[in-house]
Image (tube, rainbow, N blue to C red):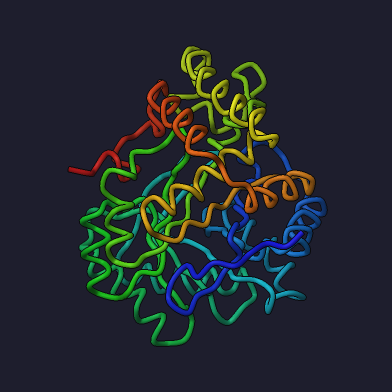
Length: 332
């Protein structure tokens, strides 16, 4: 299998599909760390070398896990991590910080846990609205000057916030939820990114697993954080089966899997909007990495894309329990 590369930002080449490290934490239930490391190594073995994590995943344990990969394969990996959220996905978030002092402290802590001298792509995980974004990005830019960070990114920002931040220091990528059933970013944020020459990194490109047709309300474990997401409520999930049915129909027509359809759809959206798009699906199983990676060679027809566009209008439930937590709730 050959995974193509993508120039996410000027001079920053990554694998055309990345790996979302949050899946290798307790956010979906317990995870054996030896198996998690084996999954990471398999991803790099097949060419998925753009590895995404955050200081809040597993309260730092995900960065420590990835440090074991970097110890032997740092030169093969394009490393992204994030700061700004306090708390954890599994137990709940307690706050957001973006003040300059916190930026510096968070970066040093992540570098220590990751066991590396430099972070390839450093994201502001969520916007601290009590702090001017110029202050936050200014402090992040100082990390670039110091050689501790190579490129800057922002997660779940509005188009206006992206534009303001980019004027302080070039932003390489925006990371936000984007998938067949989460398309609000297409209204403002994606066009602004395209205008500024900023790459896009969709998280949860498989709809937190729902678009694969394998998720049902009755099968979510007690500790699964998806219980807090409105569209994963029992009634919403039942209504949203119509979206899954459309994805599965396209998959059958194209002779591929539902996951591959969801990922190929994002590739088509990148072409439509004129910007590089590098999704970061997460999984715990090496076989799923192979399946997802194969989507980089899948091309959907216009008729198939039209069918998926129609399915997006059927989605029931918000993608976040707190609308202001994501760009959609702050976009004007």
